Image 1 (cartoon, rainbow, N blue to C red):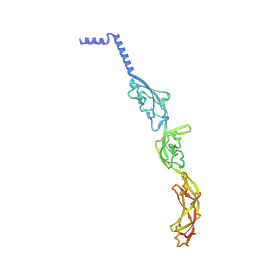
Image 2 (image 1 turned 30 degrees about the horizontal axis):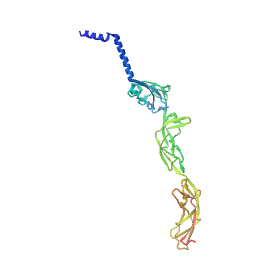
Image 3 (image 1 turned 45 degrees about the vertical axis):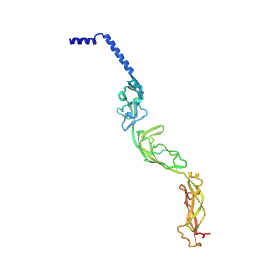
Image 4 (image 1 turned 45 degrees about the horizontal axis):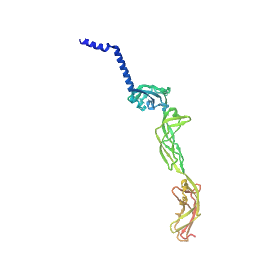
Length: 338
């Protein structure tokens, strides 16, 4: 009895009214596709590989890291979400090339190599033939001399030769490019407003233009650069009076009373109209002389070299960078010289 009832149920489900059942199945499928299409969507994105997406050995590097392959990536997901979705949410998983070597290397990317948050990656295809491979070059690391690049000229100051420490750095790049470099340069150092010695830590410029070729390399370290900056000094020939400096109660006569000297002064101090009045030439009582016994005793004449006092930035010397001149001095008690 139970088997008979079970048979009737199966007959009703699978055999009776087959046309009606097929129509219901078709309507169900159409409804499912309609709902699925209304609730989900697809969107295409352009995705370019980054250097970090390609794993290479230390002895290899990308020949053109700024021109890596581009792909058209189609993703599928909820329509409301995919409309708000951005390319920044799409990324390559770490891609390891098959047997990477110097030269042209094919890049084979599948849907499993692309990560899309909460969406399904439907397809990945290169945008053009150039996106089907990457160029790889062999790398080298060598020590190269460093030159400091200085620009500008401060008014009223002289810029000396830069001192670089260390004077060599290790750079890494394409073996052929590294071999073609004799030296590397620091970033530009502007000294146009400098008024004292500069001490700076400066990076290395990681590119050099040689002819029509631009060579790019890596050098993360900085160098210390010392640049001497000194005021411009100009010599002026001047005729100045010579004054006597004697102990109390003594007198000294000077011949000649004026001498010609060379005043070395910073160019900026020329703007001070009173600078020369701040310079004094003098001679002192000779250390070999004793104090005269009376007003009739006269000492000398003997030659004595002139001395000077001046502001800190002013130097006084003989004409044409010679020693200071000498004058003849005669000494006596005060009132003993006529």
